[in-house]
Picture 1: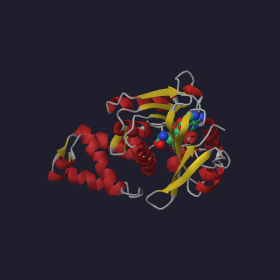
Picture 2 (picture 1 turned 30 degrees about the vertical axis):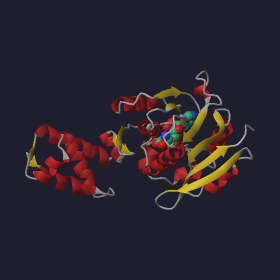
Picture 3 (picture 1 turned 30 degrees about the horizontal axis):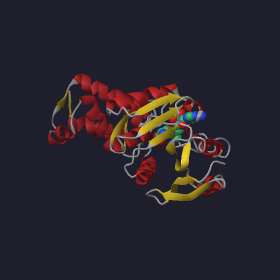
Amino acid sequence: MSTVHELLQEGRSLLHGVPAPAIEAKVFLLQAAGLSEVEFLASPQRIIRAKDEQRYRRLLERRLTGVPLAYVIGRKEFWSMLFRVKPGVLIPRPETELLVEKTLELAGGRKVTIVDIGTGSGNIALALAKELPAARIVATDVSARALRIAGLNAQDHGLENVAFVRGSLFSALGGLGLEGSCDFIVCNPPYVSAADWDSMSCEVRDHEPRRAFLGGRTGLDFIRRLIKGSPAFLKPHAHLLFEVGYGQAAAAVSLLGPGWTDVKSSADLRGIPRVLTARISERP
Ligand SMILES: C[S@@+](CC[C@H](N)C(=O)[O-])C[C@H]1O[C@@H](n2cnc3c(N)ncnc32)[C@H](O)[C@@H]1O
């Protein structure tokens, strides 16, 4: 039988190859033993039950095979909300919070209709649903696994104003009466080029869904289709907002044709242009 302190020391040294060994060891121990942060801090000499110790070791072992932390614990925080994630469903990234922030700025608390394309765990749609309880939100994805998890996330957060529908890009929206009636289309698209995918970390390539990242040879294929399909669903003067990859903003802006105005790019906390906003002026 071991104490909190001993198990933490052991976990920290086993995890020496990950970016934050002490934090990850603590996360695994809290999860395995069902301890709160306060219990953890208050009693380093607390004895951990044998079955919790075994559970802790299994979490460490899984992490040591390269499985991302979020998949090991099955959770990831986004917009101060906890989201379930599992292999096959993209782990939400902190920079994507900017897309939520920019949409909320433009929505200004109005009763709006929003479509989220490629919802994954539902993180963007559900963060918006929490902040805009009067909004009607429809979220799509091609992945049945992602939509199952997104549905569970909606239940966990008690958010009922999001409908999840399956289909490629806009194909799932037919019959929902959304043509010409959306105030916002938001999307964190697959935007990684084939060359960049090859240089991404094994943690990403071996465990996260390729389909969530790859945007064709140049990374811009999905964005091109998003821009082409959006006008049919937007109200006049409504907005399209989408995330772009590092160094991709200028190329993505050039894909927005003459029907778009007020094109703006917003930078993330690292100063990287990350979110493009554009307003439809007329139906092309
Ligand atoms: C970059 S991930 C974004 C996930 C989530 N919205 C987020 O921000 O974390 C892109 C998502 O698009 C989905 N996707 C890929 N191809 C698609 C398609 N043709 N139509 C709809 N969704 C697609 C993937 O399954 C994935 O969930």
